Image (tube, rainbow over all chains, first blue to last red; front, side):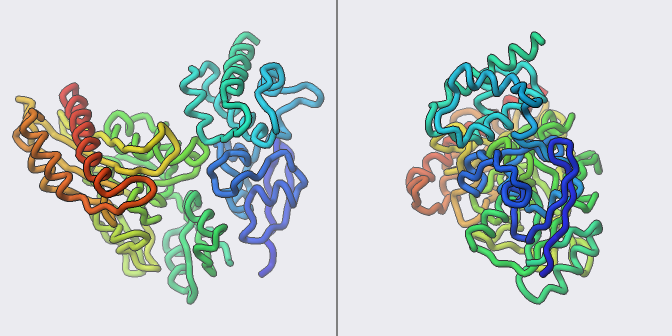
Length: 158
Length: 286
């Protein structure tokens, strides 16, 4: 079977790729487009390391077929910083030491951005529930939650 | 594996019908892609139904709501009226997985995945939802409790598609609730799930009730005997005791890593009682 030709946007840039039916959006991003910031953890939608924003919705890119995103708009971790200027969430993750090994970090940042895009003033409980689909085995989550709350506060002041 | 994303129901049904090998319907994909990845299924054809407009809409119908089978949990939560009218159904749908899963997972998928522990199904059973199924010979309406026959076994033919769910009009002084037991607060599969929908008379007595249970048998259950125990009551202790007894009598659970048979039967009574009390409070405040 011939590969599918798909055209979509990643972080605002139009891209094209060829993919097999079985390939996921995660495969297309990492292997097809070389965008390796999005990580593969479990590959079954349990860990959130592969989180991306698909037409404004936070999703696990491992649970989306590449062929499904033809014509869609994707936001990934690569689109968060503006050139050398980190997104406030990225800066706060560094300030609060909200990462250790770093594998889960892109997923947390994308998920947290999706939250703050919708709700600029979340409670700690809302942050914890929103991020319940992102697993981190290093930090114990407290630093991540603090970083997100702090970033939200800074972004509200800006 | 072929992928097709037709824009009409007729085209989707024709594709399923003409496929000689295994074919699967793809809605949100949160179960299907895991099954593909783990080689649990190896279909020759996947039919993505998300481009069929009717399956992606929520609209008023006959005083109730018709919910397209491919509407996501996140979309249900954001609907301006649904959560107020059917809080139990929406809570149940929003208990499925994480924010990421909610962005994709659908009611149609949760039903057709055929899990006895599906969270939305007992709530839909309690709500009295009807499922519209389309096939080569047209459409049929089926009570939601008649769709799942056992683990991964459905009363739906290979060339049929679940189109939508019709939630009936909710009378005055009526409300639903869904609760489940899991060993943590989020992101787990129900050990027991219980949905209750109650209608009250002007005197506060229950005039109509429906009870749905999940994860306590090979399929999600409608439990008329439990509903019957609440009719005419104000959920006083004696009525609740009979209710719990009827709930437990309906349970035929398995022993597994999530809970023993004995534990599930006990907890089913507790969850159903709490769901009934919650539905009652909601109904009374309407």
